[in-house]
Length: 340
Image (cartoon, rainbow, N blue to C red):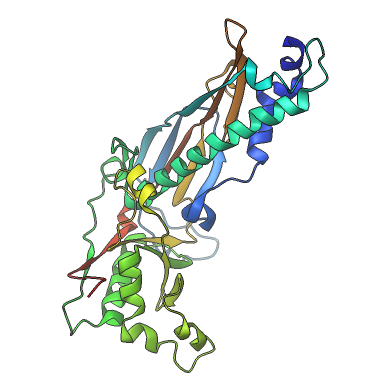
């Protein structure tokens, strides 16, 4: 039996490659492409900041000296990369009928069983990464139980921006004007070019916005007018903002300890800004992976001391951050009853 398990197909590198080739479940923020992903060779990352201001350069005489400026203040912030691990087990009885006693020609069937178990746990680790990224777009990265892993506002020295409160009971509310000034505030704090502003909305806020006359009227007499026949589309554009309903069920919200996007809330983020949103993966805590570039997932198996089975480990080591949390925004819907 040991000869099968010692086959290279069961090594850390082989199993890790296999599990990373399986389709992941990154969910909406992961699928959106907002976060730049990469591996690092350490269990921490350092983010260097060199000022925030953009300045125009005055023209100077050709052949003469150029403009000079003072040195910018540099700061270095360090983030420890958390470790997430799920353990499992394969008993000898589970593989009793997979391999005939005394033979060593059934490694693929055993390997498939190991990978199948690993993939099941990998889905939970993918969901954990999605939860971490929700924290990053909210400015505070937490565990599912609410333990703070990184308060990005404190880390980078930003005040928490005031939320945009939309009052359902205010019949004079001009959504277009409100969002235009909301846009200006984000642009002032970002002070860089961007692609578009993306709003991940809770279900009540998303429905309320879609049913605002100002929003629906923008689709009249356009090639997109057909969308008005839909009840509430999951994605729609209004002004400079793209609204996307963040889909999450009751179990996901409960598992996240209430730290997902609430029904009456939304999170606003700029897309298309280099190095604004980062995910970095540290290496696993194995001898084989020390000082190697981190991968999204790792899978390892090893024997029980009593020879009655094999233990499995599936792990991931990510950190997800926003390097300028001052541009993050929250929207809140007030005095709204979806059943009224």
